[in-house]
Length: 256
Image 1 (cartoon, helix red, strand yellow):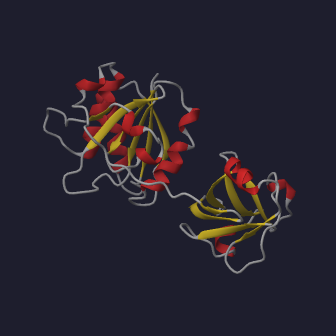
Image 2 (cartoon, rainbow, N blue to C red):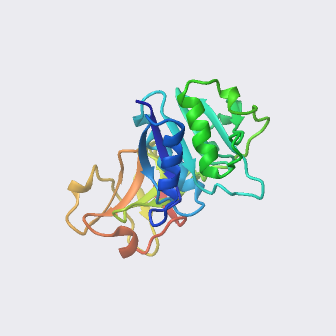
Image 3 (cartoon, rainbow, N blue to C red):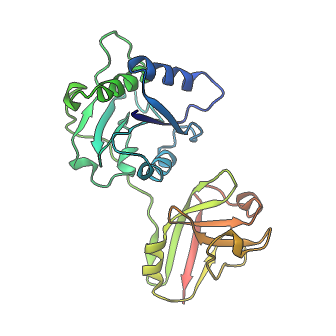
């Protein structure tokens, strides 16, 4: 049974998610639909890319991923689909996929032509493309090849010989703070030196933990999580709230 994953900023209060799922099943009734998240902050393609990038490796070949975030990004929005690493992707051409794949411009990307029944709603367009893929039709039957696509620049840490300045990109359900700094990059810049991690006017963190179990309840800790990102947390407490940290703020790491 082919999986269709959904990542949207629709929320769960309204009927929009149900409408999208019904539309997908109307096109092919044996899809298995799996929700990645419908709580993406409104129009936040960076957060959508973060969620999908950390989950696609867990899906089997042939999965269809639909991103419905910031769908009406301009007056005449267009929608694209492509195949990458044996999985399929459908979504708006607003740059969200360029935040996941560095080489997307070298990939064959197709513009989704609205269905012939005249329904040009976003959900109808997405389900139309999913049905074509699910029925094994060629990608070029979904629409013409895109001559160019929208791309966005990733927010990258700023590095000097003795410092890294990184950005908080996510606050999770447990109020833990996720920073756009991967372990391999950190260790390469660190080069076995000691460090001090500064976040707002608080005492710096000077060592990395392996997990939550190395800190007492309510104690602060920093570690690289299962996705490889730097995480700042308070064990069994609310780090973002208690430390007054929020998305898009900067943290600083000094090496000596």
